Image (cartoon, rainbow, N blue to C red; front, side, top):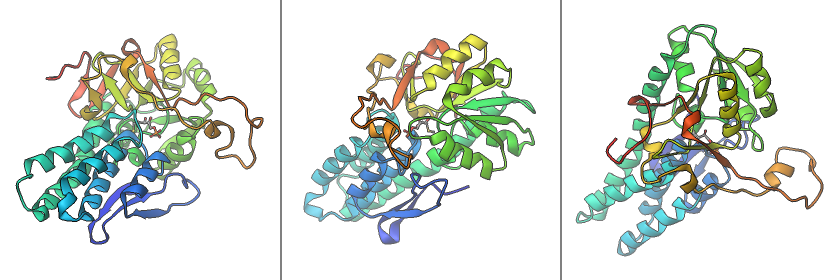
Length: 339
Ligand code: MRU
């Protein structure tokens, strides 16, 4: 499995696999200043809710290493705010930056060198916790799987979106380790094709039986009885259980309800945001319409200057979700501050 994100402390760099080049090329790039980290998150070179949190935490750490001590606290705040604006929907970005802020606060009275150590440890802890959490999600989710079952997934919530196992693909990997082989159907996930470019690539490399379908084929595979369960990741879960995930997820959830197929959301508990009451309060990122008309195609596939609408995420209402597979088990809303 590829290492999605690593900290190269000796060279003050965040090293990522450039996911915009996959599956054609596996290229690692070193991000050595905060603007590069921002750009990589904004352009989806690194993407997926947990991964952007990890990249931002590491990016903030390398940024602070480069600061003259006089401006340290002010620069931390500027850097934190700057990175948190890179993408609005995933709670993990702000959550990870909040963990960094808490580490700074705890060590505020110490010399800058010691604060930097605490920041580095926090960024590395976020990464290692993520991989432990993804494995636990895998264990809980795999308990729902039996040999030969058909799993549908949307977008990419695998190792490329987090660490190692990822979230929605974690049950599949955990089942595979236990010799329970399932068949996965991957929605291509227009417009940025994370399913085609990333999920298909990741699962094929892992030796999982994966079939790529266009988004508008999900109903057919369900109608044919090929799908037993649906696993998706998510970017933010509101207190009432409404869930923001990649655009197209809502469509899959509605179809799942129609065909009586259980639809599960897989996420670290840090993706649950009790401070957001309902899905209506989740800020949905809107991206450049050129992603629909131009990106990934040799020549534009739509007329010049066509009007577009390109929300990057949608919100699935809680009543369509069978459960939330987290590291703590399979949970049901509502999620209070103390859950
Ligand atoms: O725009 P992306 O590719 O960052 O969107 C990713 C998703 O929607 C994932 O399902 C979600 O972030 C969970 S990743 C473990």
